[in-house]
Amino acid sequence: MKLYSKYQMIITAAVTGTAVLCVSFLVFNLTIKHSAKIQQQETVAESSESEKQMEQPAVTAEQEKPTNVSNPTNGYTIEEQQNISVYDKCSSAVVNINTQITGINWFLEPVVENGGSGSGSIIDERGYVVTNVHVINNASKIYISLSDGTQYEGQVVGSDSESDIAVLKFDPPAGTTLDTIPFGDSAALRVGQKVIAIGNPFGLERTMTTGIVSGLGRPIQNSNNTIIRNMIQTDTAINPGNSGGPLLDTSGRMIGINTMIYSSSGNSAGVGFAVPASTAQRVVADLIKYGTVRRGILQASLVQLNSSIVRYAGLDIQNGVLVSVVTKGGNADKAGIHGGTQAVRYGSRNPQLIYLGGDIITQIDTIKISSLADYYSALESKRPGDKITVTLHRDRKNIKKTVILAGKSDNDHTNPETSSKTI
Image: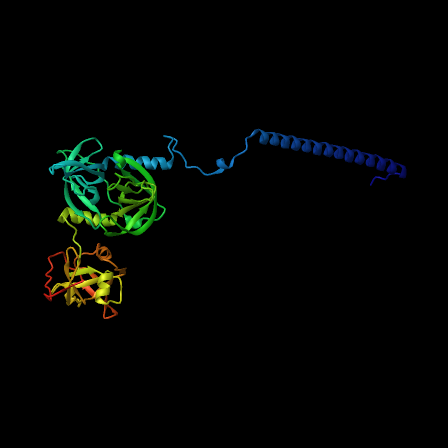
């Protein structure tokens, strides 16, 4: 072990302390310089970021809104491409229908005049076209114009005023391939769903309008005073000439047949209605196969109540359908429905024989019956063999009867009495 004197220890301590002090000062000085440099860099960075923000334009609220993404290959939005696709797919199957009617001139001679016009859809490659009954009313000749400009004379296969649907047929040349429009599923429609109409408004061929389904299940009374139930309500513009044309979904399937528009101004700015595809398919199938629609019927003669009948018969209800005569051995007779027994002549100009005292029909299944229009509407979708529950008002009480519907046939209305009074 080496020994140091007191003097040497003092000198060593002094030298050591000085060295430590110098090193500490140097470290402190470097730390200050480093901190200053970092602060300077952060200040420059913040200044640069601020300058960048000042140089960039402010984002407007309009730019922040989500936009319909466009297709980079053609520049159309998704919705525009959808519309274009449906039009390209279906427009060639939409036809223009023009009619001629037979009129009488000043010399009481029959003359041919221009009738109405409308639209239709080719639904079968054999040349079958579906349209509205009111488009071809009273027509002596019907002309069907295709998208390529060719025109054919059409024949009526069958018509059904209760649904306002008619089927026409034209004969294209051999080897001709016709474009058709398939039926869609109208039962799956939702309010708010986009729909597209193609037709020939004002003679402008194959015009397309778009809108949404604004209501479902609407009961609408047509020009024949027949109530058509389950109509599709849409805000799609339906102008004169659109009648009979297709109402399409975004896949190009026909989910309805445009029929009418309700408007206070008389133009297209109103509420449009279309016969649903579910009704059209059933009616069209019967018209093509039978020439008529096979609906179930009640084998009885019916009379709509009015104030005169109610007052004369002393009835305690105001609305309903009176069972005047039941066919002997028919379905109403078998179900226990009673006809009238008091014969009266009703009407002033052309009085008809009716029988009072019979049952009054007030409901069929869940549908209230206030008029003959309600009665026919309730049976519109019924087939021969279907069972219905009929609510009757008899002797101031309501009773229910189950009836198996029959097919259309000549009813044997044997009058129970020959003498009668006049209301």
